[in-house]
Image (cartoon, rainbow, N blue to C red; front, top):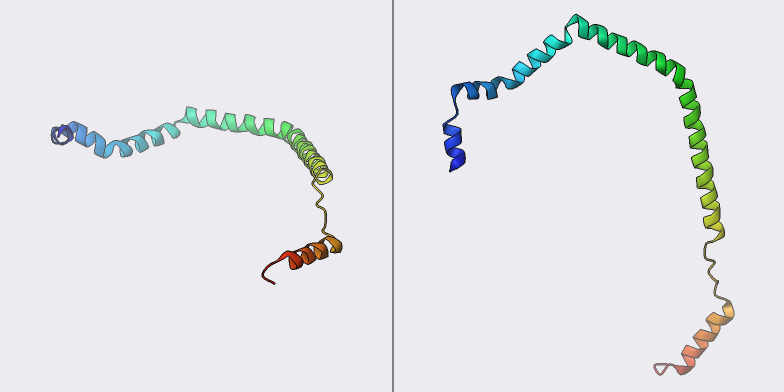
Length: 111
């Protein structure tokens, strides 16, 4: 009931604000992005970032490669340990299969 009264008691100014808010925000953002000082700051930031990446780029790529190699080496070592320590199941021999079959055949009341 309270929501219905709040919806009917909205002022024309509040209604206009809610209906046109997105348009106003988009217009203000466009005006901000077209300002010369904002454009200059953005270009300066991009230039500095490009310089930093050019200097660090090769070092960072080398570090990533060594990290990948280290991860792969550790993974291979863990795999080797897992293969060495896995359970080795005994294979049943022919004698044990034959003996069990013979025992069951002798003691089975159904046969």
